[in-house]
Length: 230
Image (tube, rainbow, N blue to C red; front, side, top):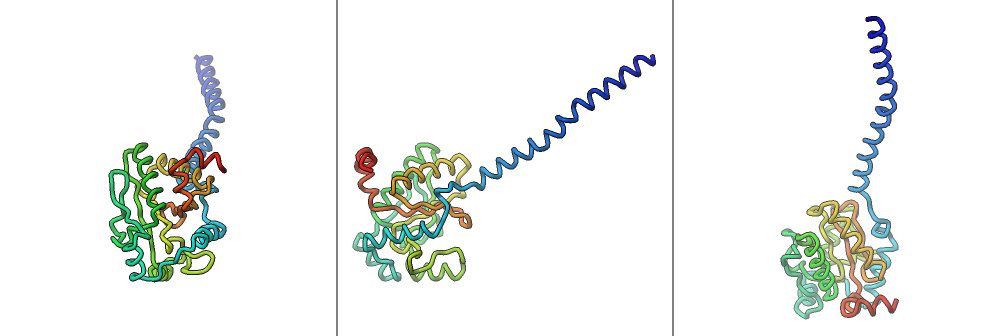
């Protein structure tokens, strides 16, 4: 009997000793999984981080094309009537935020081409539409926005908001899952590397800010030739 008791005690002691390292290891492993999940939710591609240089490049494109920063409602209406700005339309692959006013659902023609192309590619992959949360803005509107949002770009200078010239849209992130956001990042980084967009994944607003270069027309019409020429 004593031998059995002794053997049982030794066996329990052996199990306790052998399992102790596994217990001490399992906690960090669990924490590391949570950490990886957190990083996946909050990570930003370095190429899509906002910076002063990015704002300078956006304004350089506006200046190169000699585009006006739209001052007020009257100028916005005139540009829409002339066709300098074209309307964004909802479709199976494109949704527009309900709070975006009808006369703000406009952008430059090449920006709309980009939105249509990306929306169709996104829909083909995920069977869901892209959400546009912002497009053209006026200087008047941006000034109001800056008063209540310290993160808003200024209305003038080398770092002014590119929304004021109609080249830019914001793509909402809230409807997207992790795989969808990763897809959007890769899509935008590819075009940014080609010099076709200047894209930022906003940290304080749940959106991708995308300014589209007029060169997107050339890329769209002959992508292989455009890439080969670079």
